[in-house]
Length: 87
Image (cartoon, rainbow, N blue to C red):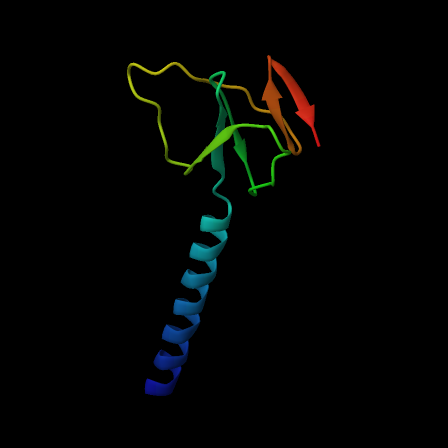
């Protein structure tokens, strides 16, 4: 009986660890450009030379006196002048 409980406890711990790892990998960083456009990225791409962005953690929020807007888009790229530029 003790062996079965120990095995069940180990299995439960592994399952919880797997769920926690999967949930954390689903988080996305927030990238903002100097024009106030922000978007989520699933992975941190290397932006082309001359592109100025700031990367924030997924739980970041701008302050009351800051003006940003979310502009989501699929794929790798960045916003410049209100236009999505893919790379």
